[in-house]
Length: 205
Image (cartoon, rainbow, N blue to C red; front, side):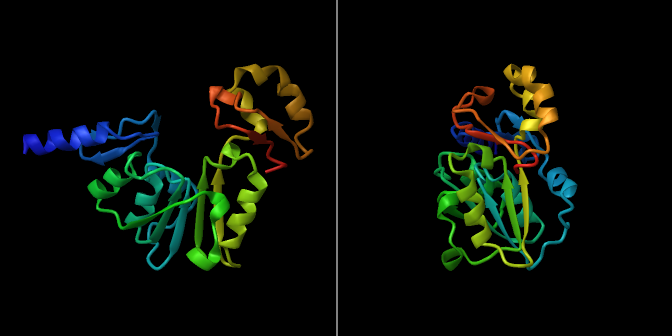
C-alpha cells in the first residue's frame, strides 16, 4: 500500500498544476492557488443536484471545477488547449473517479454543431487571457440556448490595482470612468503574466 501511495504521489508531482485542491484524503495537488470548488459553485448559487444538466467548463486546466460539477450529477465537458496528460487533469479525474469528457480545443473553436448546447457554461479566469475576448464570448453564445446560464469570473479594471501595484496611480481615474466601458491593454504586463492581454472594467464586461 505504501508503494502505491508513493507511485500516486510521483505521478501527481510530475504534472503541471495551477489549483491546489484535495485529490484524496490527505493528498493535495501542488498548485499555487488554493480553491474549494464546492464553495465557488455555492457562491454562484449552483444547485447541489445537477442531475440531467449539461455543463461545459471552458479553460478547465486541471479540472477542479469540472470534477465538482460531475460530483453534483451533471454531464460535463471540460475544454482546454492543454494536453490533459501534462496538466493534472487526467490524474485528478482518475483519482476522483469523475465522469468528465475532455475536449482539447480553444474557446475560439467552440461549435454547437459539434458540442451541442449547455445548461451551464462555466467560464472562470479565461477572458482576460484572450487576444480576441469578444470572439471568445461570441463563440460561447453559439453553444447556449435561451435557457442556458453563463457564469464568468476574472480580472476587472475597477480593482486591477490589487493584483498589479503599478496601476494604483490610476485608481481615481478608474473610479471616475467606471460608467464608461473601457478595457486596459496590458500586452502581457499585468501581474507579471505574459498570458494577460485585456482587462475590462465592469461596465465593459
